[in-house]
Image (cartoon, rainbow, N blue to C red):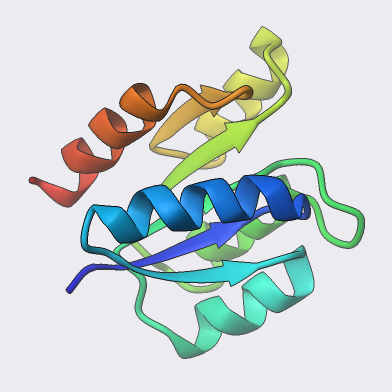
Length: 120
């Protein structure tokens, strides 16, 4: 079973993704902030991470940089953010994000992107 991490400080967003991904037959962990996300990334082997950029403790950019630089991880990271500007998207992609989806979340787009990175 594929192991997914959803990182978002908004409980509604986490709940929506949890329900959608579980329905797809995936095992889903949730992190409400950057600190807990980084601890979970250290101790688990995720197949894919959905990552919000704007969180109160550690930004999604910093988490993404940690994943790519410190963990030397090839895990797929899909940014799910309210930021729709070109600068935010470019910064995330340059730091190593595999895809960038804006909120409100288009579930079909999210599932299509996920399946591409999970090779399903």
